[in-house]
Image 1 (tube, rainbow, N blue to C red):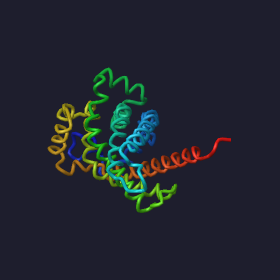
Image 2 (cartoon, one colour; image 1 turned 90 degrees about the vertical axis):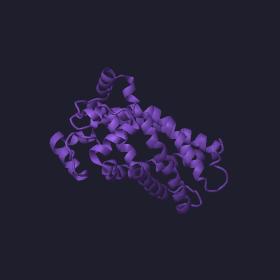
Image 3 (cartoon, rainbow, N blue to C red; image 1 turned 45 degrees about the horizontal axis):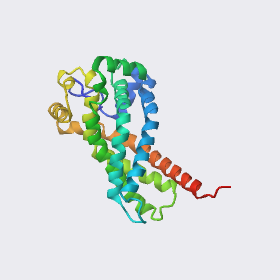
Image 4 (cartoon, rainbow, N blue to C red; image 1 turned 30 degrees about the vertical axis):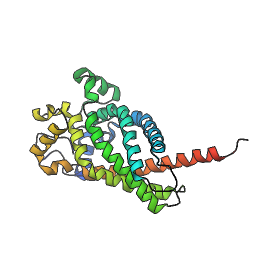
Length: 260
């Protein structure tokens, strides 16, 4: 939905139409195309993400007392995403290339080799500055929202899977909605090499891609895919925060137990 297409109306009219059309034309397996890239990159990236978050949060005073420290949470999240995105960005590019309509890429390795051979190493990081432009405000907003919601829903800060899940999902929804325009720009930059439109293929950065989107689709173009982005983000952030809090509670308990 976010990839610019030479036709003025685009390929899909909405999430339901996109789902049914892809399933009918390319088969249900096409809906999972690119997942291998996410699986390979997500584990190491999340380890770096939460490791950096905890270190910076401690340094910034986010763990002092029982007070509310939204700015420390935002700073920690920003640093975490800068480090983890450096690792994850190439995998994200591969995922986008495999998922774009008409893609001939069927495996992670084959896609990576083709991109490297035809566009060079720079292609894996051409969208990195734009990705950071999106993920830094996304993560800052998400972490601030999560800390604030957790403070209201769970003031005792005890391990509570239900409140962690709800707070995580809502925080992700807020962050996804306000950063959709930047996600559209990022997607254009990541898939430009496969675009049929010469203007899109020549996109060279954040502002140039934004100008192309505005010229071809108007202001509404920056909101393309917002609904599926929110729908996709809420479960992932809910699961992510619940898993993180569960692991954190487990290791705290392990440290508290005396050695036998």
